[in-house]
Image (cartoon, rainbow, N blue to C red; front, side, top):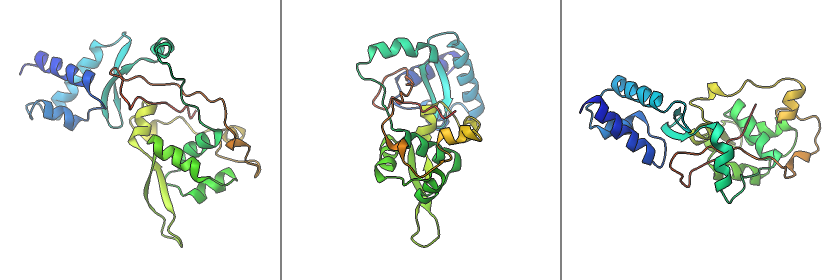
Length: 214
């Protein structure tokens, strides 16, 4: 298969995929005809073909996918009957702590925030697919260790945790939930926190929200 035909096949597969495609997935498209270097070259060329358009090809933690550019968000949201999900500040702060300090236990989170972490908060993040149990700490009681998932990185548009925004310090850290000034759990009250959406080129049930951690 010549490179032009291969790029057409690759484009079709990415546009119709229900989830990001890994390099292994893409390799199976061509039954091993192209090696990793050739596939990356095709992806780079295809990404260049879609520059300056409303849709872009991006490389995420779990693979490659087409999605709308940030500039298109305001227009695409007009087609959605549902408002973006809203989460309590306690949920967002718990997520931020897990993202930056992982792996952590619920006890670690409570020590940082200075308040009790409810099971409902952890469950909300697990059901959203943003966190998971990755092990147990070898101390009495063997508490679960929590970490973020690839889906979390995909929803943020990132390839790795190293691309997370720089951690705030001082008063900014308190505002972000990585430090709690007192034991009062005011942050558990529902907040008007609207999460901007990413839009895969082919809308699916996995279309997801992005939590701004900066």
